Length: 557
Image 1 (cartoon, rainbow, N blue to C red):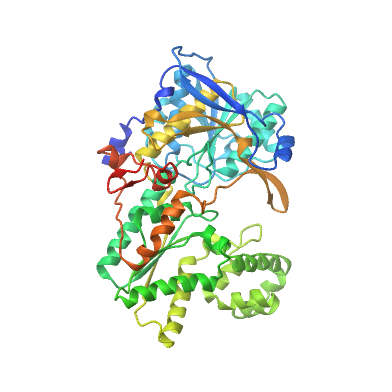
Image 2: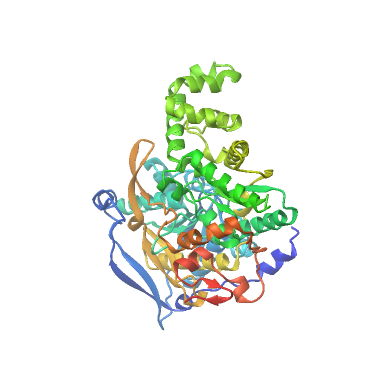
């Protein structure tokens, strides 16, 4: 297979490991833990894996040699840069513990475990995928591990292959499933450990022990480059307003990080919109006022970045979507018989007056998306809503009204973009290459210690990789109870943008200046070779959270 020059060069890259786990290690246990909320309920649901201590690996003189062990690995959910390095680190760590250990990959996600589809991952295979993007070494999938039948089916193949430990690489839902699986196997004394690794480009799997999910760094740098390119074009042509939608349905971490990297004129943060109880018209007015203010200075151009899930955070839109979900589920057959050209009017006539008024104000294309594009559960597929076009068109209407009132005298031409899949399988940045390799290696150490129900944790990540802290955190520690499909279930608590945190506060203190002026920053492409200050920097979000942000090349710590 032909390879690019970058592929060949990256294959030779040796990821950096924390010094503490390079040779002999000892496992240090902290205090017993409890879940972030709903402690009594979580403890009852996970009696065998609740309350375990946080773990930390420290160096020791004795190099431990363990019995050979067979391990399985699953890539679960959407792709994120660095997954192959997690597997590489896991493989190398297992071989370091015992060269006779073997690693099996289950194909196309958790379904591979259930359906007994797998392949052994040998050194020749692993070496082909080191430091590469994507999940194509074994593929991924979104099947959920939730039922006893699935667990038992998986146990059949685990026993057939003599697999004693399973590593599940995924996001909050996947790691929740991993914890449920760990509890079940411990309950029945199956003799199978289950370890998780934190993955998602959305950045919403994080807490005091998981500083960042892998892939977030690379994806944001990819999007940051593209936004910077658009901004350079925008500043050159000086005739368009660019509306850019970014991934992030449940949280706005990607959008906030990209704003910190590029300094656009407008950036919407879903969590702030929800806190301030902003209406759709309020959001549109906010954008229109910035457009008008720039136009008054002769600046008829700009860049606005928008999280894909922002619609669901506008309280009135959330109510509308909820009513539409219920209404169309109840009257699906009757609605299907309504002629297409009468469907929007039919909806307006049959929902509450408050929601009907909002629905009637939407562009026709978006109104149809809210009623026609539905998932298998009957819910609107928010990711398919062209939010960037919705806001752009409504801002155009608002500006026309302002022009009639003599409050605006400019030109408003739009370009629309959605940056999503472009960032999910990029070649991982040095940070993600190192971080992911360290996570995989740490997972092997947790297996060597006989642990189950833990997630690999690598902290202190704004420091050089040699100073990173490796260990494990009980998955139950991150859990709370949430309503899912009308049933209360234990899930890992999603981390939304902290409006009192340093990253948002920094953004909020600068956005008015970025709106008025043209202060674009152009990050450029990810740099894999060169000085460490160019190649190995973490996200601005991490730096601000850890108070090591740099300005004009000088660290603030």
